[in-house]
Length: 282
Image 1 (tube, rainbow, N blue to C red):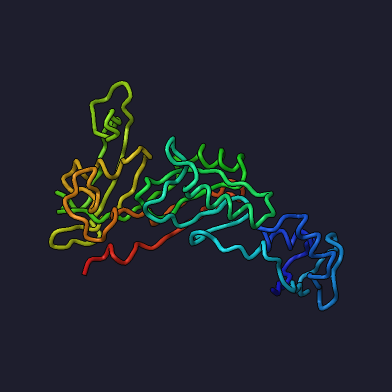
Image 2: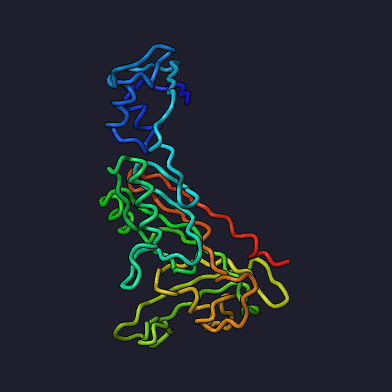
């Protein structure tokens, strides 16, 4: 790996920036054993001051830095990691399932990359059968900052639904409550009911189906599935909420874009996972 120095910085600072998955202990070992050189000469001191125009070469990284990711990694730095969740996998443990979760798999991946020093924290969830972008924090402080400003996050989904909605675009606003049957329904405002706001627009219409872009202003359980079902256009493959067909052999709901403010840098970050090809019928 070759790095061209573009600003005055210490060698350790540069390595931490470019190899953000490696621990400081790991970087010190790389320096100690001559894995890092500056302009062709071995560099042993992390406090060495680099200048613009110099060249830093890294011979190789150890096996722990080449750990295969369990899912496609869409974004990663020292503070966050976003991955593409497959449909059919829980985001986090429930009373009946504790091990086979996205959280467990990403946690193990980060642990392996950082010699068991790394951590991850769930920021938000996706329903088990929903695929797409999911974001995790690497520190508890980062998680708290993200969740505090989560209402500023843009969350876009692609939904292939049965039938055709009455309007090409609209906003659905109801109060949702989960019943003893574990199904969620719209109910009058009252105890236990949570406000849910879903916006949709038509992307493409087919004979029996419609591909929608959906944006949620709130994050209630099964929110999109309930609202579209009550609109008369259940998500294809969603038998729980009234779908009669399953053209792509899975729940046709995918979180394809997440836009948020980075809790450390303050930059606006966009993470995307393209809609699966089966969503585009024909």
